[in-house]
Amino acid sequence: MKISLLLPCKNEIVGLRVYLPDLLAAGYHQLLVVDGGSTDGSIEYAESLGCEVVRQKGKGVPAAYRESYDKLTGDAIIVFSPDGNSKKEALPDLIAKLEEGYDLVICSRYKDDARSFDDTFMTGLGNWGFTLLISLFGHRYTDALVMYRGYRRDLPEKLGLTYSRGEKFENTRGMYSAWESVMCVRAAKAHLRITEVAADEPVRLDTTGQGLLLPATRIQHYRIGFYILMQIGEEIIRWRWPLRGGGYGP
Ligand SMILES: Nc1nc2c(ncn2[C@@H]2O[C@H](COP(=O)(O)OP(=O)(O)OP(=O)(O)O)[C@@H](O)[C@H]2O)c(=O)[nH]1
Ligand SMILES: [Mg+2]
Image: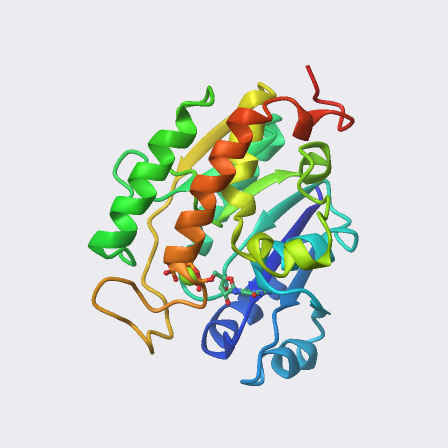
């Protein structure tokens, strides 16, 4: 199976130096770095190793996914966070499940004995609460928010995730609306084949900016949490529309 590794990156030079050489040497079908405006030399470093880099124009991680989507040519996409949170030893298990035919394979930080070493009390609680809520849509997840996951190439399009609701929306509310949560909700609604593999989440390599309640991060946890709640409300009210036209519609 041809695997496209997608590495979202915003000032991750520390992690890129650790991961890129090994990931490139592993010989995956494709490795694409999508950059959200790094100023620490991440882009230059990736390009110096011959990596394909997409510089996103819109803001936030959802724009990174949308703007890199057309460049991905594998049978399946694996999102790998190059900040230390994604354990590369989990890749063979993840790929094996994709090869078995699963549409969506989550690298769960909370399945079986797995745990997150990056969580604070706050993020642990948030991940637990949102995962329970998202599981009400029909599939019992143990980790619905983790970025580290693999899915069939056509899944985002079929679930309506690549659809842009306009520049203004995407650069405001949309930039905090996580693909991860909506993907889990809509994959469950569409009764797709979903599974999880257990994978610890190690701490971020570059831990500058770590707070008491939140770990070091490039994203805005509280805003994202708020907008995930809004998304969930919208997914209940507009149960069928996101799937319509995508091929999974009821
Ligand atoms: N392309 C792009 N990547 C981003 C953007 N924001 C964050 N990232 C990357 O996405 C990955 C996940 O972001 P993190 O800040 O680590 O967020 P997180 O892992 O969910 O949260 P923590 O567990 O608290 O670190 C990292 O590799 C970031 O560099 C963005 O706007 N654009
Ligand atoms: Mg991270």
